Length: 232
Image 1 (cartoon, rainbow, N blue to C red):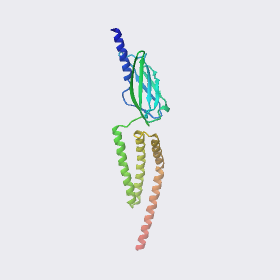
Image 2: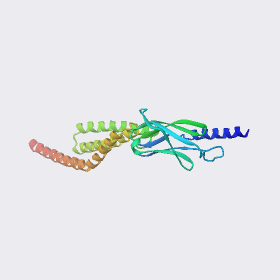
Image 3: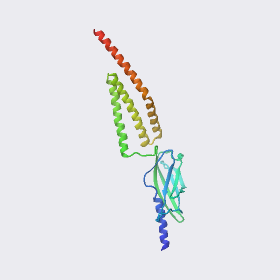
Image 4: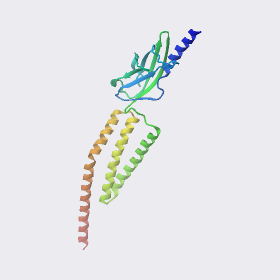
């Protein structure tokens, strides 16, 4: 009877070992270390110190990243840390942990993700990002259209400046979308550079538009005076 109880305790320990992988969605940042952990407790809340755990991991394209590599035993968990050169591919990874203790063994599978910034957007964030992108794009088109049909120099300058500011905001939102949804570090980096260049160019654009406005106002005033002289 006691032998059966001990055997049951060991099986429970192994079962808890492999199902104690954190159930929350695991997300890590691209090109950063990713610490994969599992906890191990038996029914007396004591660490299953005699167990050995090996981990295998598949890349998002199903090629092998780790093949039955032994995990490191810490005080209350086992872990394996992926190095920076092992987290360069963005996507969803599949992992298998196999634990054994003498004649007893158990295994379980879990998934984790690697994204450009180590996060995944919520539904609310998704609505905000894409909603703002649509609204700002519409305003940009209207601003540029009105700037081509108005005749007042100051108003025309204001519309062009508004268009430039909207382009800056579009580049900012584009960088967030590229990072959070497309998981493209290349596109995200391009959008980030675009944003920085436009921010640097903002004061020069303002000065240029002011000069153009002054020139247009002076020119229009001169033409108006010539018109009045011609009428007189």
